[in-house]
Image (cartoon, rainbow, N blue to C red; front, side):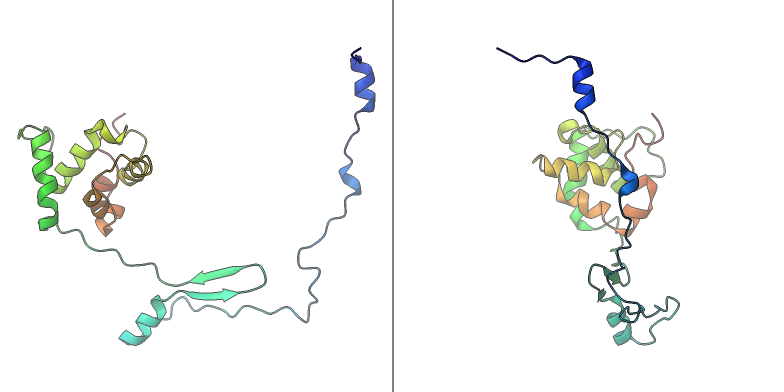
Length: 176
């Protein structure tokens, strides 16, 4: 025979949590003040004078403690985007083929790279482009196994592809 309980009987059996009795501790309380090591200051304004010291400065320096690792170093340099690079010719030919060799509308002051990326944006084979940067869309398509062109990623990972909004964002950015 099943046991039934009324709301009032189950409410009386439910306990409450009392947080006032908890002891608050400091995470470094186990280490005595004399055993603590002070971190050496990092001189941010210092610039290396010769090529060897510049190469040494680019290597990430690892400072390890018991629980924390700190990486200090210069960010990696990104390659420059060369508009007339022969690597982009197959992409440009494919983009023109998909556009039936018609000129782009509203494409004044834009180069072949813009044309390639615009056709990539409008190709729904890789999913919708609204609300994502081009690199995010490329990575999502790659993760889903849709095999987007690797050259598109190469364009987007250049310095201009990261810094220039016209290249980083899709062609509908700011329009919707």
